[in-house]
Length: 395
Image 1 (cartoon, helix red, strand yellow):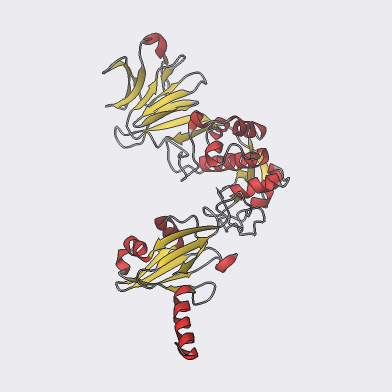
Image 2 (spheres, helix red, strand yellow):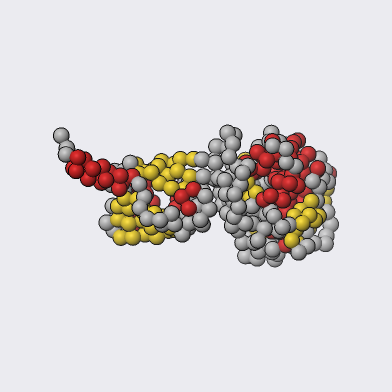
């Protein structure tokens, strides 16, 4: 049997591998060979601005969408925005734009030129496409069965539309329907083209909001999301970094699924908040949002994106307020092989808000091969964590 002194020494050694050392802003865990690491965290996403789950809880507690917006974007004013947006369709990676034939389908040059009613020109066609050709021109082809045949060419870029009705875009692996215009847009790199959807701002939102939040959520939460998404799109349009499009359709901007994803409840929320945006200094704000704040929003690049305690994020329906991801030391070693045999993990540069000192800025991995320093964001994404607000439990 161990003496009391030996027992306490052994216990201290075990606890040193299980508990972090250091302050709340910098903590280190020893990682024995073959260890299992439970990464315990809060929230989903960067935490700036509106928490989508928080908005849902706030709505069920009686807050209207304007009160929700005031909480998550303090110091902003209400304004209006409309017009059209240009959205890159990332799933279509080919140089041509292929659409299914339908009634009312028209092709026209983006600049001046004659439009062609395609159902009248070739009523038996099943598909149509725009193909870039030499001389800065666009060829219009049709397909009845088998091979493609040429109908005409036009100067510059060209686009399909169907008088306000959705047009089905066909691409490798499937297709989707889109309102407005489907444009074959020059990128400035020779014959390279991108497929760009040009449509009214609120029509675009009807393909965004049901991809960002569940359509069965409380109507006031859907309205809050509609305002945040409209404002974000208006901001990105004003600060576009690409000449031929202003927004992408992935979570690098905001997820957009076109007319295929429209839902009645979310469309009603968009109609109910028509043209409403949040502004500062008369311009739309950078209205970032994420799925769950975890209980604290994080500070963004502007004063209207402060770090503040979020009383709405924690409720039984939010699976991301608290989460656990389990990894092995071998997984960490495989992800950062330069560390060799991992011996310790240190977190530092936390933001100071909430449990464990808040979100992690830097992770330092030490091992037999050396030391590897990564950002909290890289650690999160490469290990599949939900946010940078986490701590470790080593066993």
